[in-house]
Length: 415
Image (cartoon, rainbow, N blue to C red):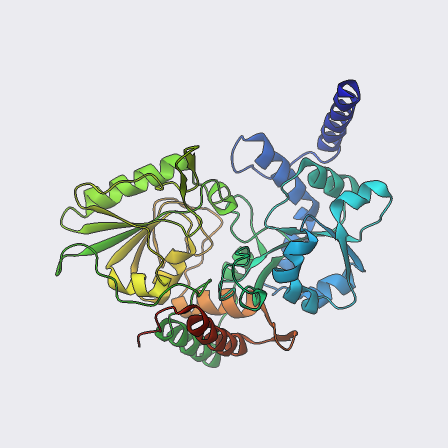
């Protein structure tokens, strides 16, 4: 049995090497890491389309029609589809989905769909051998009430309401241009009406404490000494794709905390752990970069669940690697120091420790918001199961959050 496995492994390895020779990579890889080198060579499949896609908002229906797609192979399990991509199906009429593993059994796919980036060698090999179109999908910046993977919460609170869909690269990949980056760096100009719409939506999001997930208590925090400046340092889930593809690693979080302390000697340094972060005391498993951090000096770990906007309002400035907290802090008008390279960095709104020669355009907050949340994102109302505008999703999330708070006894919003 082991002999057969060795033969299979060698066959796959030779197949990958052969594909590498056929599809010699032209993009500069994000890092020398072998896995990310494979991913960036995959992006070469779409390289010739970059120019004609620049400045053009993505349309799922048009993409499917232009490429004659009726069957999409995906790594996403049937269970995950139930609460994560249920709404995405409504954006794709008459499309069949099946596991990418079935492509080995003679099932022919017209394209591939990945949540984030491909995570198995099998998927990468299938994409590169067939040269079929690829869709990269993630939950939107206003995603759901509760976290989709939380099986302790009824399914009705976990449905994704918005999606960030890209046919070039996932939006948080700093190593290659995504359609979002190309839109932001294009000559696309906003009308006065579009700016006004963006401003109204930003104000409504902030006033109602809306975030990617909306199950946390909305309370007024009390950390550190009164009348003392507050600086927020954001933890993230250990090894998250957005960190690896956002030019950050474990050392980034170490430097970020050191910088926050050194640059703000008179402030309380609040370190917010990621909602998924925890410490397995028996196995010492680290799932957050600051999961083991203990209080010391003016450093105060914040592990209690709390609404993102509530916490952002409480502080004077933020230090982030690639966290969405940084984007939400911009919406709240806060000073944001960025140590990785997330989608919202490089446009003149953040204080960046890194830079990219690709991001040359300066954008206002309203432009960044409009292009990201309105032009780039797609929305589906889980109740009607129909595509809709962002305004409708805000109404939906507010109603469902109110029900969630009442059902689970979560402190109500403070306006």
